[in-house]
Length: 283
Image 1: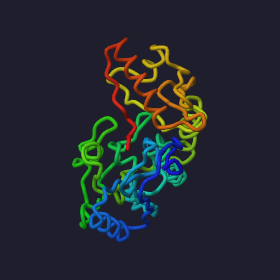
Image 2 (image 1 turned 90 degrees about the vertical axis):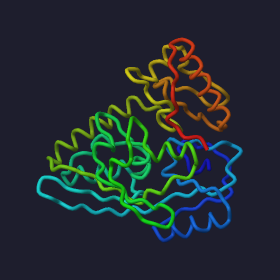
Image 3 (image 1 turned 180 degrees about the vertical axis):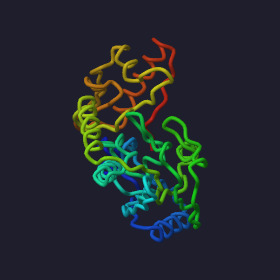
């Protein structure tokens, strides 16, 4: 799984599949059920740590990327399949003069992953745009209104279910509400966001933010104040640029990363009494 995650870490899955459409997804899920295999759906492999021991079931990625936009005067509904790249979709909509996704410039991963975890930054998030999500639940395709997602900060009913069972329904597509704007202004906004992101993002293999920001606090600043910038376990390092990033400097193991996660968690709790919560999913 190291080939399929942005951290470039992870042992082998017994089975791995890339799914191209709903019928393929339905057939694969049915096969996994008949074979008594645990099935985990993943997006682009960001915010994901697979242990070096690997996974004894089936890990599958939904790759469908088609999109269409329906205009309604000064607003529009973008329907994007779950495998569409988040950053590329944001840039495409900006070029067409549709606002709402500028914050996603440079965001790694897919539309499905963003819907799953309520991705957001720079004043925007999926919860503020989502109208509905098309879901594969068992054999049935269902349309879920945004309210059913029960969104909170970096969480959803789907993400909470995955933590409990490891097998949430599959996101097939999302319908997002956009508004008309000036393409030149949108390009300028995304250029500024890209520059800000580049100034904060470490070079190397990472998963993005490791911990969620506690209410009223920055996880990265607390880890830095705990004196852990540059701390290492094996080939994993807490970034010198942003302390809420852990960088695989080359050949890091999952235990290296989990060791740094534990060290940061313990230091912040000991010094500040704050119980940091993981943003990354561990398989």
